[in-house]
Length: 143
Image 1: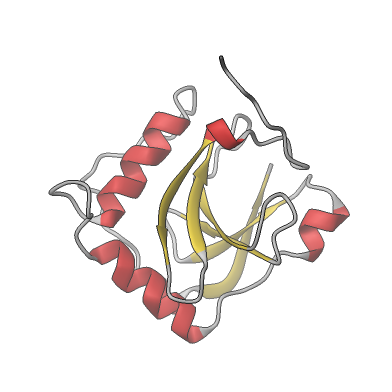
Image 2 (image 1 turned 45 degrees about the horizontal axis):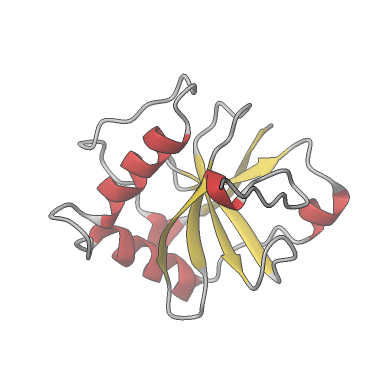
């Protein structure tokens, strides 16, 4: 039996990968982004779809990603990470994955590739990780 649970922003719980959790309960997630050509991760806190915190960060750059066409509700809860959260994100992604012999960064890249099969953006696991401890206020907009 295939159960599909839809959320407000049309993501199914079956269409995401949880990469890990930071100390303040922020969960790093990769969604199936059917129309996005800008690869990014979601950092969420609370129960979806009504997360109490949500931030999107580009995978290839240490910049925030803004969903241009999302509802006002989703836009209003988009937030920036504080310095500690940025540092934890960077350290976590550089550390070894608990499920294999790769880093959490490589696991994230693989999760993007697996969850976005039709995307024009595919990553080699050798892609250099940006310094996420210094995410700039620059925002990249996309679908």
